[in-house]
Length: 314
Image (cartoon, rainbow, N blue to C red; front, side, top):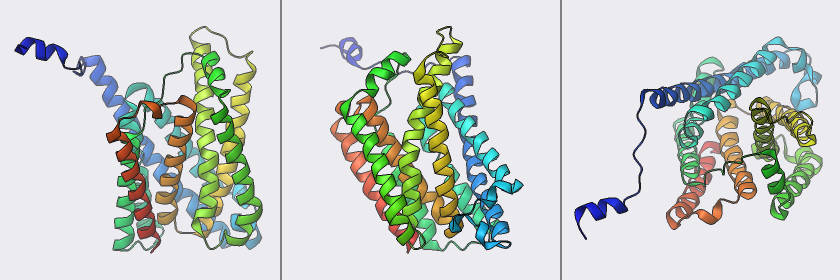
């Protein structure tokens, strides 16, 4: 076989480096980094609001079941900051590859850890810093080796995928496990175990991501001329987003109120990323396309995150 024949067999992986494509890449990169900065900072702003509230009426604290933070302007600034960050993250996917944008979400953990040690005076020892790094490393490996989402062309395609028995079982399992944690586990162990509240945020968060994607698809189709405002599924996704995000905010506030931000953020990132990957894989069926190296990468990444969590908690 000659040189030209061998070359012909190689996959075409050369990137398009035209000015417009490079411009899109840098726009996506900027949006992804900006997203991490906004989201990482939002944890600090909300934590400062909760600390301010704790110095007043104790019954209004999130950990006491109060909702006094809803009347605190600084807490709302944190919510707005996080919203801007999430908007930047959503927009980044339109310009840059997901394999670039998703791992960059780990930067928000670093931003929070640095700001919490400087602005909140929370102590993060050397082992904790190493644990954060290990958590981020493991999560990044999982994201890199996880299957990429299948592009869904229409709401009809998405509705068809939602009828899959495995996906329905996952949604039911998430709801039942969440109810069990909220009703039984949280009242008993919520104050002593950081995993309790974060588990609720992460489980419901995996559904909120799928809901956001569904709502985004409806908006995209409507803008392109295929009207989806009369589609019942559009309003189902809208209601799901509102419900899931509300639950996430409540239990994330409880976690932030009870534990150090430098601990909440990396563990939340690890759990949230893991459940989002799992939910997306079940809905879009990409695991069947994984090679041995990707499967091994996922296992190693998951074990690495577990080691990191134990280091952070020591």
